[in-house]
Image 1 (cartoon, rainbow, N blue to C red):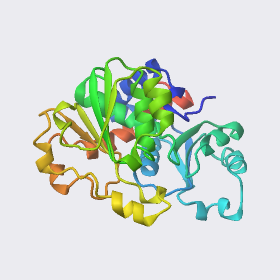
Image 2: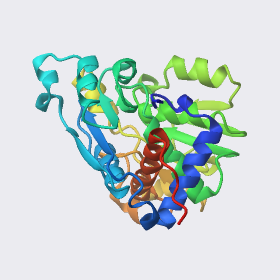
Image 3: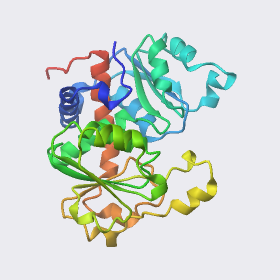
Length: 308
């Protein structure tokens, strides 16, 4: 039995295999419509979610399986004080695999120690979000045809942005990757990523606080929102939330084939006018999330790719 708690739980070869299956799912969805007949996924979400929870549910339904779970801690026995360990022991009696989101870093790891079925980390606080990373890698590969030799700009909340932390952790294993980290001083990338991942592996990166200056150098611009729920001080959130806004004027600085990505939800960090730019792929990215999670569920449940 395997769990997915971090992108590092998958080798580069396994990630490439998942991407290959996901791309085949996109091309031949009907071929996979009965792969998970009789299987059930439990979505245990202690924190609000739209895309991640619904894409897990869509993924299992598309594979022919079924779904159960809860979308709010207050609608579960957590509101009565039940521990994560006890919850997964029970839910594991009802489902074949569990996708868990939790506001506390490390909660899915605790769950994996007690669960009788595979645990997928669907986001734990500001730590990791490995299935968003699979979504991001699939989007990049589908649009660029490669996962190497790329300059990637990460913009916005790099301190609390778990999608950013996971994406960096995954991409540093591919050759010729360079990062441009664009954020205000207060939201700079944390030391456990800067020192333990980037510097330790001699990955080239620069930290800047102006978006326009670096736009021409980027293959990918990965925007993130400033996350109100991660702030202890409302004044700090208000002061920083409008620090970086991507509009069509800024897009004129970018290369014609640069991709604009965003894990969503957005607030105002990407102007609506950018949606019509062919380089904006964040809504397609959400669709790729279903294919990536379908392929991942198949892998963790040991389900074979159908012959036809």
